[in-house]
Image (cartoon, rainbow, N blue to C red; front, side, top):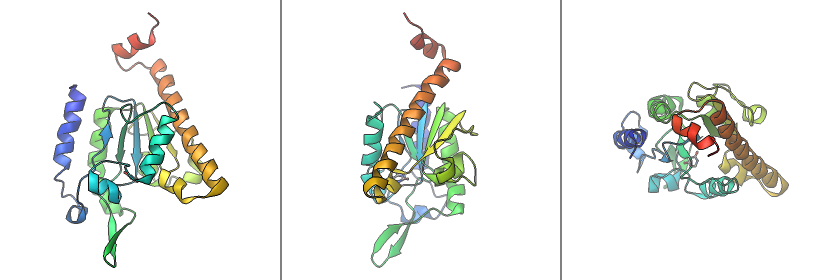
Length: 217
Ligand code: URA
């Protein structure tokens, strides 16, 4: 195992018993994130839902299935990228006898931010793809407007290139032509992120190994 992989695993272990906010009282599992810590591309969603809370894995419900398909259409699997969320525990409210997902509160995002920052400082991605506006508000800039700014490149404190695309759960709420075009945008934005990784690698090889990979033998 590489140093980065080891350290990410160590931080994941520390996060698994986190009590920095009250979500620790209601979560079943801390969903730290998964994938390849050596990746040049990190995808960041908002926070775990019911399925993620139950399994400890990010994006495993219907939104995750759509994300996996959109990645696969670009030749990308979960082994190529690292996927995590802004908050690592499910935010939910009790409605009758059922828990319903709710947006995270500002103080929950702030309490959880050190985990995300540590992940990004260790992985040092060239490209971050935010899934939806809430992740972009944390990673790109606070007043991020997904309808206006989706698909545009920004420099972020955590990566030289950061962009936001539509959240797969949002895409799933649409129907008919609106669904088709939103799904297409999601796939195209992932293609653009992939293209940016290749371009960024050419411009600034991270290691001698990157350089060797790119040079024709
Ligand atoms: N939505 C998110 O933002 N993250 C997940 O892990 C699942 C659904």
